[in-house]
Image (tube, one colour):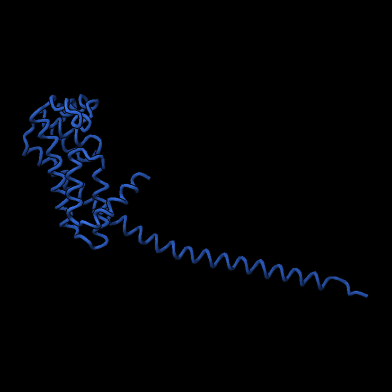
Length: 211
């Protein structure tokens, strides 16, 4: 599965660089890195489980990286507006086909739309771009984004830690399960052997003696 493949190399990278790797990867997500933030946050949770980082510091590091990364599309929208879409990598990051729909939602819902973007990976970057283009002040934007980060980041890291705990438990259970299967298989084989021997002995007793 693609998610597990992403999580595999993220886990390896984070294990080598600790706090620095999650910060840089999450910051690059704001620059258009095609990787869901949740994968990186779950990877950070795996580090917490292994004791390589602590929960509160890694939560603060990841939150700071996300807020900085989210600021880039906001300032692009605020500074350049629609003209920024002429740049290829910006157009690829913002997804122009969703632009009009997002613009209508921001016109109708304003602050609520900015807050909700945090919880939908596909609309975060274009949503923040629209927020900047619509003239939202940066303090208001960063406050709304921070409220979303306050929920999403610790929850995702905790789920990563919980996922690692469950994987260890499952691994231990599978070991026991293999032993149980081996014992049952051996018992079944011995039962079949003893039954076969018993049937042969019974048939031997039933045969008439030779003259």
